[in-house]
Amino acid sequence: ANLEVNPAAVTASPTLQKGRSMHDLDEMNFYTIMLTRDQHGSLDLSLEKSDAEYAMIKSLTKPVLEWNRSNPHCEVLEFDRIVGVNRQRGTGKELIRCLQVPIANEKVAIVLQRPVERKLVLKRPGKLGLTLNLMPKDSVMPWIDKITEGLLSHWNLAHPGERVREHDRVMSVNGVSVPPASVALQLAKETDMDLTVLHYPDDGGDG
Image 1 (cartoon, one colour):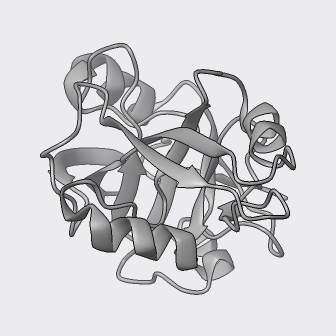
Image 2: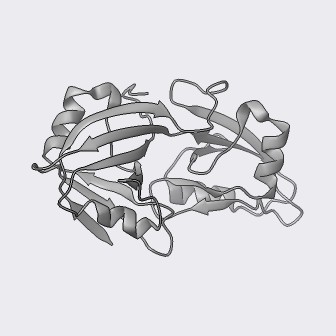
């Protein structure tokens, strides 16, 4: 379901998502891990698939936890986005199909992307122009489906290095972080609010 919200963006500031090390990240926050399929060809990954364009880590399963223990400089965390599988790029749906190919004991190289946490102070009056997408049974958190003409788009133009964009995840509004539906509904209230977003850098060099 889509939720139309219209607050006003006043300020925003970027910080690295809590617990994330920059040690093995490139300029796009990409890093690579290597997992091995089991005898049945499964990688045993828990993925969030509500956004057809981008799949991301939903929870840390046993193979991922084992990778993290062996590679503390390159840990996988929830909300890391999958951007490549065995040198293949594509949409979230396409990459999920690559991950599900049942080849026993195959080693699989997975490229992931870490989000950057950004905080916006939203004040009324004024129209932001933002459509959120939330699938109650599938979405871990709501994601930005569309940014239309308004204060947020103007702010993005004025601050290209700190912009918010489509497919970013809205993590909390005014301290409300669960359940996801409540996070989205906070934006419909006629009050000022603090917004926390996980932003995925793009090739525009916004970091």
